[in-house]
Image (cartoon, rainbow over all chains, first blue to last red; front, top):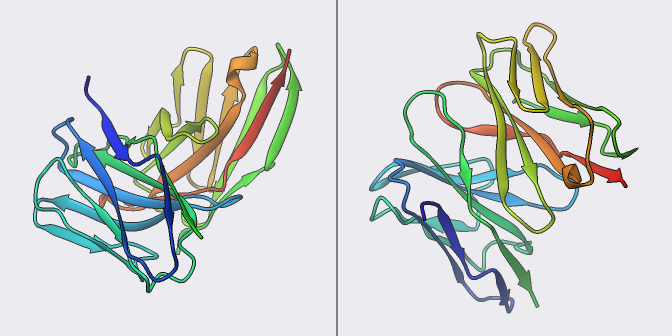
Length: 113
Length: 112
């Protein structure tokens, strides 16, 4: 099956710890994205990557880091510098050429204890 | 900065009624506008994409219109069903850079 997978579905973190969220796609898409969703708010863009080995900051990149070493993988690290990391994190991908929709994974819910 | 607003935040209708969901955006220089559906605790599913040169798109019981000059889009869902209960989000892409600005969504409940 083609699609986007995110793991884990639920993640708990103690304050001061770094955690890494996984995002994998087998759609052969060039572009990948990370969003954060808080209750009652729209999705906010954290980082995006249009091609392997390149990525750009979105609107709320502080306290997060990413890598794009392979086309199919775009992991997100939530660092201890992120002051309020409890949220629902969504990964997406798109072909990267012309107008096309973004395809979303099932999400990871991160809770800081 | 592009601001996207969706009103109302929540809507409850009896089964069979037509749904009208509104989306407004502050910068009319958009590349496209998309409507997504999100079920509780799940990711987003694309419903319709309207390019800036288009006025509307249709898929089954769904119809979305776009008025760039007034900064508005409307999603119509005909003959609503309980399975249509979900949160509907609109998103606009300003330029050809694949970055989307999202509204907060309208949560729809269709009562059987």
